[in-house]
Length: 428
Ligand code: UD1
Image (cartoon, rainbow, N blue to C red):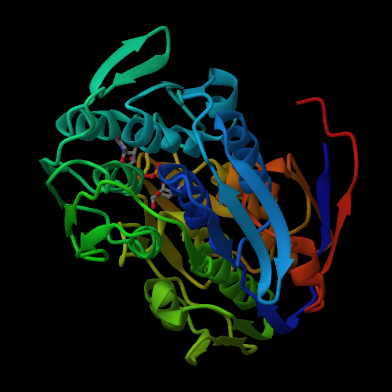
């Protein structure tokens, strides 16, 4: 498997175009199952996760065509009929978000058999809220041998659902099922992430009736059928935030383009507090870090519009070089500090106690071999490598390929010394 080698110490200067959001794209692709008409998604990221989901959707009956349109990469999804309502363990295990086909399959076909995703490297991540919401909508659900067997032969029925805590995936899943349910569904304590708004906008373009996307209460009036639509995937706020932190870490001046600055306001506030200049345009953000040392800055992750858990690892990498001690609290996922011991291999001083990490800034990091453990953790190691003296080699970069499009190309275009080493990995 591939590795990424970085020689640190080069400032970043230039422009980085932000791609369409992975987390949006994969839900929009699943939503295309809800209609027998073609759905055209523009501004699509080309990632291992989208390719993987395309494979699953083809097995379910979708024709998936990737093209390069006038505005960049597009994916056309067309499912004239569902030929199979089955998503196997092997498919769901490899990409958790495959589980999201369950709702659309029940809504369109009245039944589905989909593997439970199982645990993953950032905590237990159960799907109980997804299943309870589908049951509230009238699906009969049995769990057997690791599979969800769902039946709703006479269709789903609108319901009042209140989530006990905010879940992005459960909100999206419920929304996708409710759009074809009979009558009204109200979802309370819904997630407000931009990806929810993006999904709702796409579903509305397909003929769904949804109000309140981006607020904690969603109202859905079920419709009998959805049509096709064309929809542009929202820019990837996590990719944008990652490059903002990378620029802050390496120093220099970077303009992020094709993005929505408001989506990363919480991060930009923290970057400014640590001494980085962030200037916001309509679809751009200019990040500039001068010669002064960064200042320790605490963060607490929270659902949107709070500080994104998907940017926590990157910010921790940045704080390893700040002056003073930064307290980093993770409240969204358990066990999401696996990057801490890897950052320590580069010389970072981090103490983890439960959901809290204390980072004592050091004067400098030194390159070393490190191992990626999950998608966002792995990019934090790349970011740290940009500032570390000497060479950092990040192993298991398949995690990165799941969610970052042309990462090395985008960074090296701004002056980073980063390259992919093809082939074998360590035997760990
Ligand atoms: C999505 C994102 C992920 C991001 C996360 C939080 C995708 C593909 N992934 O993940 O990148 O880090 O939102 O912004 O969009 N939970 C339960 N039961 C459930 C569902 C969730 O206990 O049925 C818990 C989770 O374990 C976690 C918390 O709720 O502790 C929030 O998870 P959730 O918002 O659902 O995250 P995902 O949708 O899985």
